[in-house]
Image 1 (cartoon, rainbow, N blue to C red):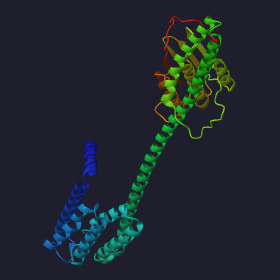
Image 2: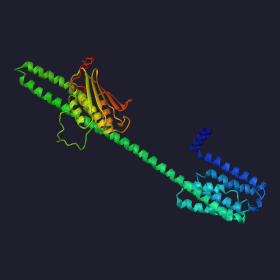
Image 3: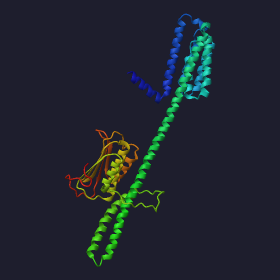
Image 4: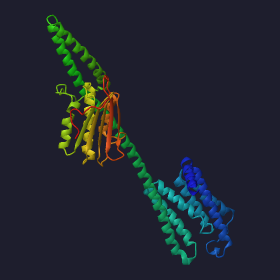
Length: 414
């Protein structure tokens, strides 16, 4: 029940702080008037008061305390009104023990919203007001009262200043957090763009290779067209098949191609594109780096379209790189299955954390972009038994497959 009340008060303070301050000022005013009534009925009141509480005293009390309702909107004005009403109240001879709380609360508000250059002089004004009230009391308690009031004023000012510093620090942290979030989004976008540029370059290599084949076969067909029709027909068939493949790669290339201003048109960017046929060499390099690698290849192994072959190789390569960077020492396992789809499953048993698919890790961002290009799916995350796993499926345009498990080809199980 208490927690629900506090929660309701917090929501009200956020939505309408003036209502909260008004209720607070009414509470302070009521407590002050009740205390005045209790003092009037008690004995020894003459030591602090030369004048009984009347309508003027009640009016000054209402003005000095109800002004707290506007303490957040006009803290300096509220402090001035509260201090003036209290000073007049005490000077008129009313009880010196009344109406000291409102100036103290107004001082706290000023200290929490203004710099020390403004709040510190205000603290001295409130302290002088309290010292004046202490002097109006019994002579035996003047100095103890002055010491007590000085401590209370210092505490109110210190708490207000600490609140202001905390609010300012939270504001700066919120700004830094928002800027960091924007920078992370910018880095992620740049990583996607850079990865698409790399993918486009690799697809360019594939297209360039196919076009070279087409040019050579076309030259051969033209050369033997009259003398060897069978060879010419074979060359034309090769041109047709290669042209069909290169058109598919061209569509993907144009989907991701971005012009890089720093590209050197004379650079040698035509190295052979890697594929799963180089999986064994990749595994050996990782083993040499200190991470055991087990490779298993099942299904009906067959040649893959060049773009998908490069994509599969890069996914395995990046996954093993993540194992080296985040999970070592660990054992990595690579499972490749040829079926209606090409399935890649790369996992490790390490204890380290890898970059998550929703995070800003550039490795997995690149994997997602590659797999998305070929309308595949990717799942990456921690394994229940420990370690990390990446599962990728890539659709194959020409199934012609046999789902029956076949003996491993290429790299044997280790």
